[in-house]
Image 1 (cartoon, rainbow, N blue to C red):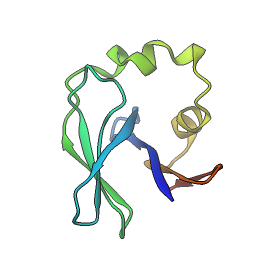
Image 2 (cartoon, helix red, strand yellow):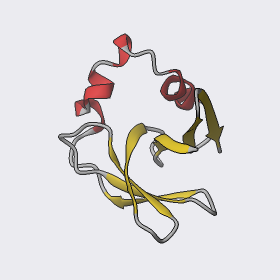
Image 3 (spheres, rainbow, N blue to C red):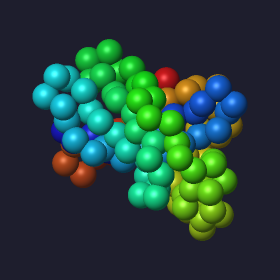
Image 4 (cartoon, helix red, strand yellow):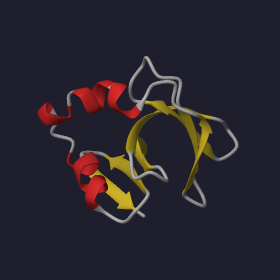
Length: 103
């Protein structure tokens, strides 16, 4: 099983997308903002499935590439998160099967 993208909705209802960067060897996956120009980072505890922001985004929400190109995107998880009363979604992949845990 591998870890894919993580989606996090902040207190203002804005959704941000993260990509896994590395595993820290202590049961956490380290994520960085999906926009390489942004410094935003988060930590995902693999056991508790809790995601915490470790570094705030350095770009405004509407400045992120994936927001600028939102209309062209086929990212259904991102689009679903906007309208859901949930704050996190984690994508897992096992072989060719993609699973999304929304919580």
